[in-house]
Length: 308
Image (cartoon, rainbow, N blue to C red; front, top):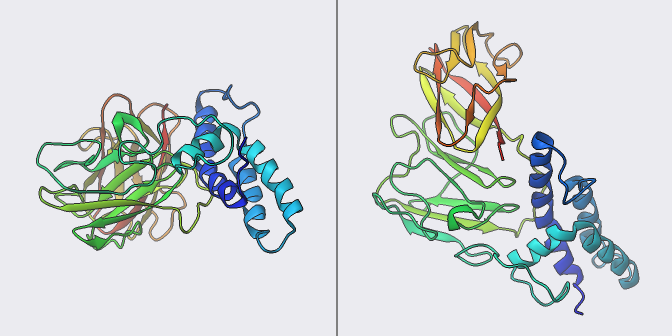
């Protein structure tokens, strides 16, 4: 039976961090994960992977092999999935799960021109779309566990919002949610004829991340956010620049999520809302979230969790 090399084990370990975090996040909402009980911590996987990578050239082959074997045991089923994603069939056993990275191959980029109406596994967004799930569903590629790079019209895009109306994107490598943002009226939506390129990146490695990375938007007047199907909002934090009276709802001018609240300028404390009910769950279709009352610029951090 072929044995994984040190470099192969490191690559599988890095991808397994995201797989483990995603699986554990689902269990925290809907009961323990029976396939992994107790659950495997992504932090533990990250620590062991980092130790193995650090030891390259610094430790003896014998010591490295002990750590490598432990890591392969630790990541278990996640390591098998990572092996298939990497297209690595030279080690780690004789059984390799199918699927890999989807229609485009294990680590192939997506590069396409936005069409008015057509989508496929090779061009997963059409004109007007603001998000897509790159998690292997709907025959799309599965980029979970990976960093990505995104180009729009040949221009590299950032995940950091500048608040000046320029386009940016959100990527959650735990769940595979890719979402576009920008100024009104398009709100960053894909436009017919645009060139898009999404490329997976494992050169820089993978760090520990979970679903608690917020989506950030900026508003200086009434506005909306599209909550993707399959997600819920569990917290909204607001950092305003003036003492506006703000409400948040699921209908225009509504207050189903947060009733009128006077904002405290330039801080998060006391602004926003934590949700303990089902007022912001997109189950079966996208949901529009309405923000009413802003008169000057405010930064809004929206925290999402997958519902399944």
